[in-house]
Image (cartoon, rainbow, N blue to C red; front, side, top):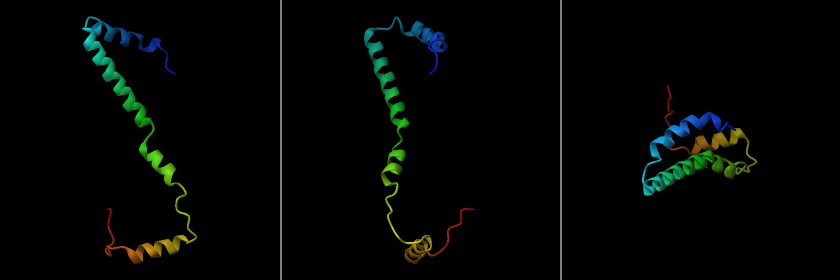
Length: 85
């Protein structure tokens, strides 16, 4: 965890800017800061991580890799190979 003292000067400079604002403005700033933190927390738990955990092991099949690739190639709708170069 980061030491409180490392941010003290920065926090004090912001406080000097906002300390004389009206209470309503301060409350709005609190709301915006809280929403900002909430969004940061949401990003920490990425939907992609949840999706991967949900589908991990979902394919329970006895087919070999070669059989799966053959099935894919037989049923694909685009017969022309796609170049990524």
